Image 1: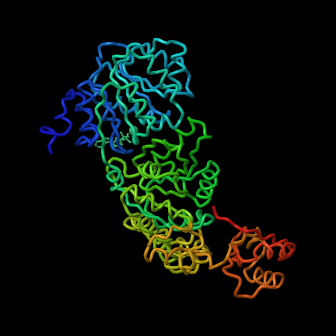
Image 2: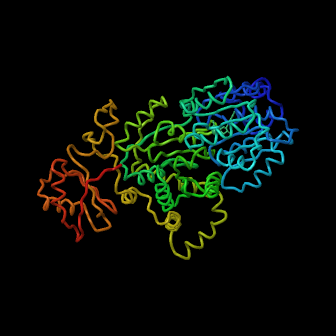
Length: 558
Ligand code: ADP
Ligand code: MG
């Protein structure tokens, strides 16, 4: 479709708006834009339902810009957004689309910044106010007339606003505006609470629903990896070795987990940072800016902190912890594949969470394929490829610039060019030997090839036919066994045979009764018979290994 005959030009928008939109690189309106723009232009109230990443901002921003009068220096449109980040994003979008409309000003109103300048910008004649409900109510308390001239209201991400508890603020805002206003509501989901608001505050709204649950995620290649909770960090590190990513966002459930994982990544040399609700808002913005411009490559975030995050560089989303519901899954993975780009989403699934995986597959209407941890060979190949890619461009002219130096050094040292090149490689790789043996030593635990045992770790009554997927799942728990943990590990000088010996001797068990023993750096796991476990643990209460108390406890992974 050419721009002259269709696309944005066919939508009855002001030519200056169309020109600005085309200048941003949009070629055609998205489905929600195609359907919403004529309705809003015609002045109707509207409810728009579409998933993240479908282009809802322009769906309301373009027609709203078209409907305001730049000559009137007073607030005419109010857009409510759930968070400061989203409000800023929407305000920036408005500014972009209004680039060729002289006289149009946009003000963003949000908490954490002084109120004075915001109020001044409104009074100075900003026609478009983009606000979070909480801060806007603060302004209303100071001046109840602030919204008296606003005749277009947009609720963006209405479901998120309600989740964040803005219901009462919204009521205050509705009541501070002229009843004759146009009201438009956008939401990814339409729970009863939103329908109730629409019922009370919208007039004969037109409904637009984009059935895009799957459409939003088709550009995103999804995969999952079965892993035990305590192996997540090492799994993430292995995956990073082989994934070809630009920027990456990892989701975890807790603030502490954002900090722990981010520092584990930093320790491995990745440019990573945590993003969580405890981090001050201006600092959060700095993190996002750094991710945008490449000073950071990985952000480890909680759902709340990453809400609405739009960074085109993001090629990968790692769901390190399972999302709470399938909708947040869709939200999370919508952080990649922005604007039709390709993205990749990986979901770590612990044995107990397999059921949630099925729910996600059902809701998104897509299979989330299983992948396995890269083996040592794959890691080796990836590292060599990286090294090759970094050196290849230098080869062409290095001889011209450094050839003579090489001759001199080989002469001075009295070695072959091959020996010197090898020494330089050792330096370039920080002494890391790039061979299988070295990599295997680095990665003591690759849970890939464990045989599949009983499904004791799966919720009972849930026995779907998963074909050969089940057989390949990592780290099964042997039949009738329970996993137990001790805080003794390799750093305490413990080896599997010490644990085995102690348990056999003190516990009076047969060798066959003891299952897998895994010794990690700071702890170890042992599989013991479920039957009579409490008695056995009591018996082992005072057992010492390598001079330290064993203190074996039943272990639950999540
Ligand atoms: P939503 O609010 O539905 O999550 P956004 O409005 O934030 O989606 O848009 C998602 C991304 O798609 C943004 O980067 C935006 O610039 C881009 N985008 C929006 N509309 C178009 C379009 N018609 N063509 C290309 N890219 C678009
Ligand atoms: Mg949006």
